Image (cartoon, one colour):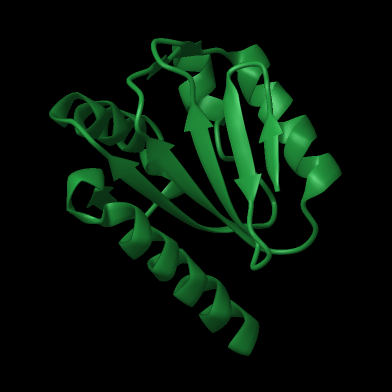
Length: 131
């Protein structure tokens, strides 16, 4: 089910994989991150995974970097990037959140990465449910 937020779309799949696609050229702010948190609290039950579809170029404010993806039920995270710039922004985000010890893959959207990312996240959630 696809939902429009002020900065982009959230698409919730039946297996609790949630695709996030931000609009072109935005700068994610702390207020947008809070909008994400409100949306997740109101629309997602249980463990879930995020597929960040970076089809568009966008950046994060410092405050947003520090608080993004701080969800209680978040069990897996993957990025799909379509440009070197998106990969760079994603790596900078990972570095700024090194205290979280995120171990997430970055897939190439130009090489069927969306499907690979989705499958990886689905497998991660299935593994968690088995344990």
